[in-house]
Length: 130
Image (cartoon, rainbow, N blue to C red; front, side, top):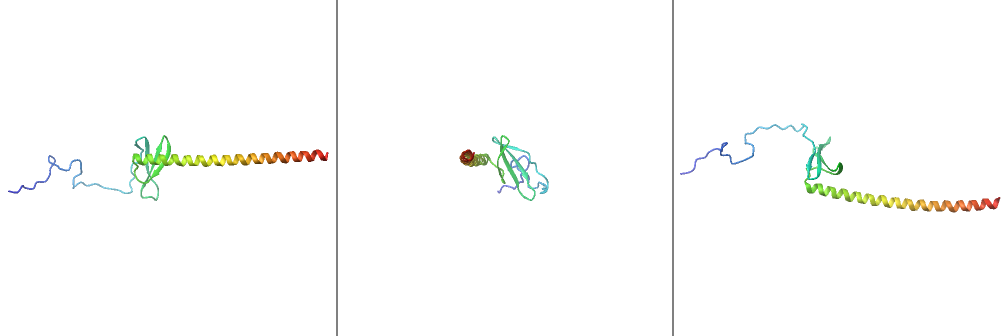
C-alpha cells in the first residue's frame, strides 16, 4: 500500500532555517540600506551608495588609511590584495619622488657651479677695469 502524502508541519519541517513558501516580504529598492562599517579580518569595510550608481562602492581601510575600493563585498583575500596593490603603488610613487628630487638636486648643484664661475669671472673683469 502506498504511503499517504502529508504536508510538512512545524514538527516535521525538512527545510530547516528557511522561510516558508508563503512568506510575504516587501522590498523597496529606493530605501536606504545600512552602510555602517564592517570588519573583515583586520580591515574595516564601509559600503556606500554613490549618486547615479546602481551598486554600492565598498571602501577598504586599514588603520584609518584607505587601501582600496571595489564594487562587490570584499573578502579577506580581496582586502589583502588591495593592501598589496596599495603598498606597491606607494613604493613606485616614492621611487619616482626620489628620482625627481635627485634630478633637481643635480640641476641645482650645476646651476650653483655656473653662478660661481660667472661671479668669479665678473669679479676678475671688475678688478681689471679698476
